[in-house]
Length: 289
Length: 288
Image (tube, rainbow over all chains, first blue to last red; front, top):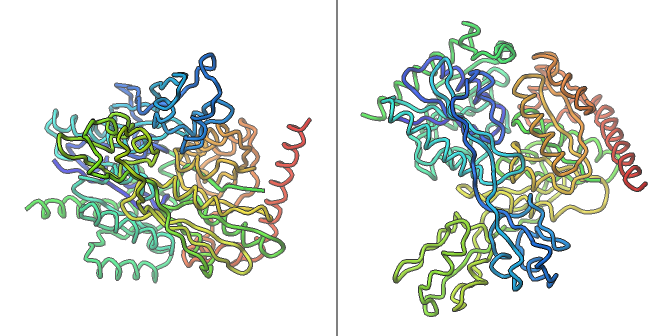
């Protein structure tokens, strides 16, 4: 089984539109939306939720005001500065439990935290594992790990060949959790100085975790000289540039209709994504040999 | 006045709005730009600041004094992040899981753990045409972006407007970046993705009790969903930027809109005035 994760560093380069199209083009796969902070893949795949689960993760401190002697030790020691006036700010509390262990009056109670939900859904293109981290919650990395683990279980149980994951932007905790142990990262970039700067950072992260990367340049015609620079950069770093996708409003139109772009149109963007998927599946087969 | 520029969804134009706002305000008064998107900081590309100070950001991690350790296991028991494992004759510390809370250090009965440092990023400050500039960079492979964001925010001064460029998303890095702001400017695009993530960003701002307004970027494509949502939720759309190839090209070359098309400066100045009015109005109401 192979696991392909689509990342970008910079947000808004087109990860989800591309994964939505891969959902249509690929066979025998499970889809995973690893952007648990701001998940959007469901807007293209129209999932019917089959299973809904709570995601309990970490703890949060509460102070029992009847037992509290207001000694102030917890406030002084909290590294998150989450306690003021003998009350815990549950958004700031990181659940480390130091206050619980230190309180001389045993006035602090640690409660489990409901941090979000995760789902297994049916779509027209196969099963989708997705999640919703609660607003302002922590542990997005753990929820991503859970989504990937569930996707792997579904793939194993049904003898499917491949997991395609839509990753989050950035290079931090949820990105590392989406990437580590994956077989291939497709990095979607755009020919802007920001896109190029962020590509370099995500390439370093892929290298750090030993995951092979391929690059796709989206909206390549916004700035063709930057596109050539990206190609030179990739050449120097021995990374295949597997596709150039033109800028086209069809992508937005498809999104407004709630459809992956390859289903909505057979124009130039769809053709580019089609050959991109061919390159990736071939590239993957070569890698396995 | 602290204004954070956020969005939920990535790539909607936060950096464009934050840098253009800072650029415009810098023409007439004191302004400071803090790039808190420490995973992928981009404001420096547009502001080209000369960096005058650089500080490494570390978190506190436990360091073992082997001769004092009795392998009692207390540190592993109290660690909420599974960052320590105690074997019969060894203690394993996993720094990448450590949140730096210090519980193990304080609670070790033998005082066998002391404070060590682990570098997780850098914060750099400087200026660009009179605009004071600070950004943070999370080191490759590190997870604890909120600690770097916190360090960037300590550089905020009371002198003039402070613009904060916020990372995408709705979880802990976003909360760390926007906490304490007077206003949250949410940049979105008129698409179902933009709308879905705008609604999440609005919820995040509301949890922190920060008033918000919207900048609608790439107007002209997509649908009316964002406008309808804003009307229903009573959130003002303070600025609309059209989808234009020329704006996209300027951005691609690292030139912010207010610099490349100076006629936009009056729009960004008006945006700031509207925000200022909304914040003052709110402050008057809470004082009453």
